[in-house]
Image (cartoon, rainbow, N blue to C red; front, top):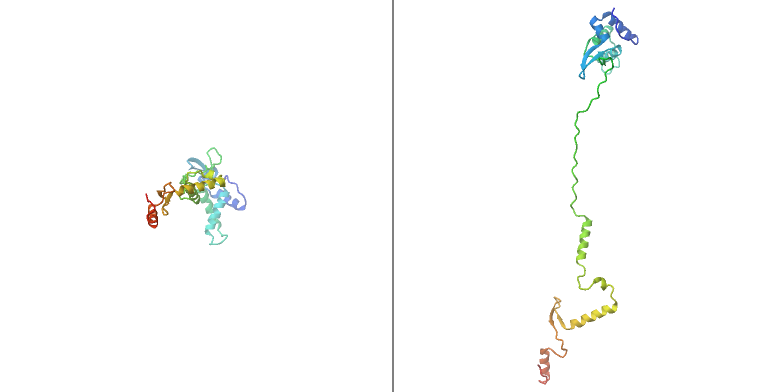
Length: 218
């Protein structure tokens, strides 16, 4: 009987260990006791299997044999023992991995090679549509341009006394007495003579006829 470097926990594992020690070849015993060298992550590692790993493997194989929806399966002893030989013999089935110095191998964290896509945000287009406030500003400008264009100072007008205003009105009346103004256009079409004694020749002719020629028309 070959002594195997396996630790059994429970009756099931003890039975599996006894079967392997009675039936394992020297080559299989070498694999179980010293592990198998494999290449992984570009390193030479040692894969060592134990009975705990085998029990997980056996459960997965039994699950495959169970009927759909069943929680358990009955497997004959010879089938389980056959799984044990296969588990420890097959190099593609990995156990616990160790470095060559005997320390447990820790796989390097995977680095995502996916490139981040930078999303460029387009600058917001300025709203060129005139707002209500723009129209208000335009209206104000027009109003300023159309203010009183008279020669007098509007601000001073607001401070004039009533007596001064009456004097200006009287002066305007006197000036307009000597002017003939077109009622449609408002323009001065003829300047009246300052001689208050002079009269229209047509009216003078009428008076001459009425006075039998006693009025001399110059």
